[in-house]
Length: 223
Image 1 (cartoon, rainbow, N blue to C red):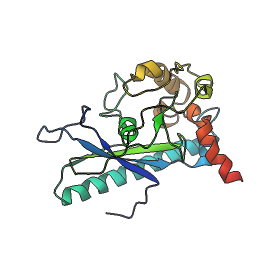
Image 2 (image 1 turned 90 degrees about the vertical axis):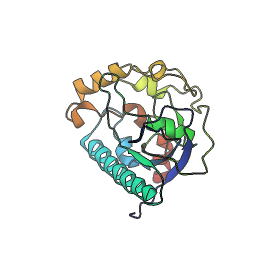
Image 3 (image 1 turned 60 degrees about the vertical axis):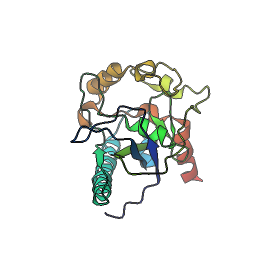
Image 4 (image 1 turned 30 degrees about the horizontal axis):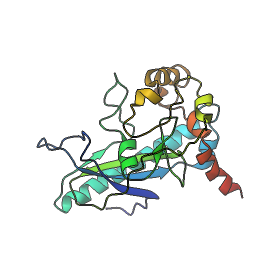
């Protein structure tokens, strides 16, 4: 396996969740979750909409996540365990606008962070200026302590900044549905109508750009 240094990672106990099945029809009970930071200056530059630099950074980090996923899943299999990598930004259900399993769920159960009012994972070190990777496995792992509360307080900056008015302002807690926090279709339609030049409208990032936890990262760089 290549020498991929991950800034933030953990293991999640997913026995209570409907995880993807392997080729024999068995579900996976655990996952390794990790976060790859996005370039802070790029993220700070999309407060009024995505840029080419953001689209390029998004692609770069997604490629890195997929490389790590394939390498990690392969390494796990060489040790005699089952594994399955979850691709970054892979929308397998176009009707409901979702993938095979939420990366964010694995990340919260691994103790990496919580879900903000913008329906994205927020981490202490990097805010929501990250992208996530997940590899499912049956390997015995020391799982992290799940994060079961949000730390957004009364902040609504992301809600106020959303040009599609797709965020309800509801605070996240484990088990709350995505629809209670985000009108996914409204978000998706806005991106396709206004930012189609960036990955066919799959990119926006405004809500993440204004998150105070991310802006703290930029402030540290400027000190």
